[in-house]
Image (tube, rainbow, N blue to C red; front, side):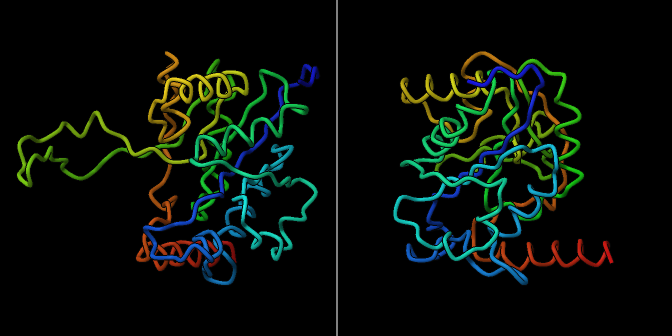
Amino acid sequence: MATDNAVKYYAVVPAAGVGRRMGASASLPKQYLSLFDKTVMEHTLEKLLGEQRLERIVVVVGQDDNHWQTLPILQHPRITITTGGDERCHSVVNGLEKLSSLCATNDWILVHDVVRPCVSAMDIATLINEVADDDVGGILAIPVSDTIKQVSGGHSVATIDRQLLWRAQTPQMFRYDKLHAALIDGLEKQCQLTDEASAIELAGYRPKIVEGTASNLKITRADDLPLAEYYLQREQQECE
């Protein structure tokens, strides 16, 4: 572990998934699908590179993934490549361990889905600014606006109070030592770790919620691509 007293910021981007729900084949994971004028991964990494406080970005790719070698952005001096594991949580652990020689225990790690290319620079900066003084960390999330139903056997059996519910997004930002320990402990206990915050919660901590924006969507299915393209085009027009 590094010993520099100044707190630093790093990012881990799990990118070892295949994207079966997209209908994408194993030979072309969804992060390499074309979006607007680039691949999904290129858009995502450009957004993270735009945040100058990030010292290093570790991109965690699949063991059999050769596609990343064709993307010039992955040669950027602030980007490091490592290989992932069976599930997202394993890949994040691998990314953290790749950073172990650089990070101090109190440094911040931002974990961001590679398939969230529409995250705004403002959202990333707001998360960092609002969580920087927290002892544990926090996540971007948006409040649920739909009426939520509890379903059993194909029938609605209850209406859930939506004021209690938020949709988790990324980046999710936590101290290196707490995040690493929480993930390792969760894996050893065979817990279901759907995101980094779930591991932190299981460790007894309460992540801070920072309200994000609806445009920071996760590309999961094929009909998410045109919506992501719309958001990126709108963002480009606003910058012109």
